[in-house]
Image 1 (cartoon, rainbow, N blue to C red):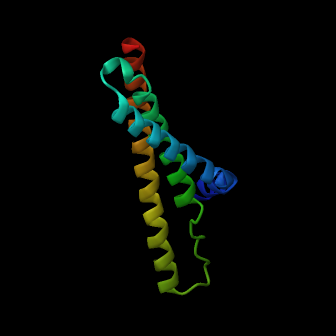
Image 2 (image 1 turned 45 degrees about the vertical axis):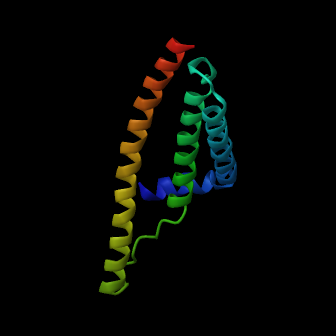
Length: 121
């Protein structure tokens, strides 16, 4: 599974700067809306900017973390080398779990926020 995620992260690695730029633009838009809005009717772009920022940061984090997964240990490697690689790969399995939970949370939050945004505007 880690190899598939690594292949996916490597395939999309050239989009990493785009996601970082997208997140920065969304953050600037959100800050601009907060600083210039006088009332609730001026906050139209706040929820979409927040959602765009979180999804772009999630994509950028995925690419940067999973692009460098250590390879599986070879059978002829020493005990400490195999142990070290197993611990490193275990950390990445922890990242997979965190990303799965965060993705589910972001999906639910995006659904709820988009519902609120549609009702308000």
